[in-house]
Length: 52
Image 1 (cartoon, rainbow, N blue to C red):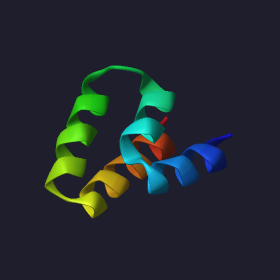
Image 2 (cartoon, rainbow, N blue to C red; image 1 turned 45 degrees about the vertical axis):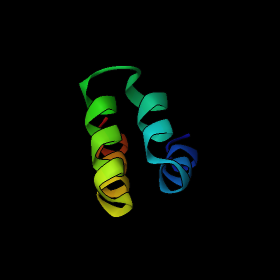
Image 3 (tube, rainbow, N blue to C red; image 1 turned 90 degrees about the horizontal axis):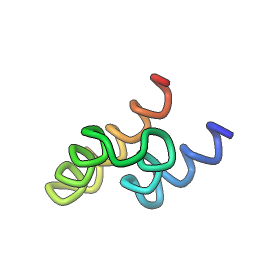
């Protein structure tokens, strides 16, 4: 299941984080990072998914 979330995180980082943690602080951090740059959003999303 984590592999599917990581693939989703690469395509749409906030969705991958949302599926892992819901509407918590990591989701909002990821939204901001994705708006600032796509790559930081991906890195943060994969980190959140791998950490849990």
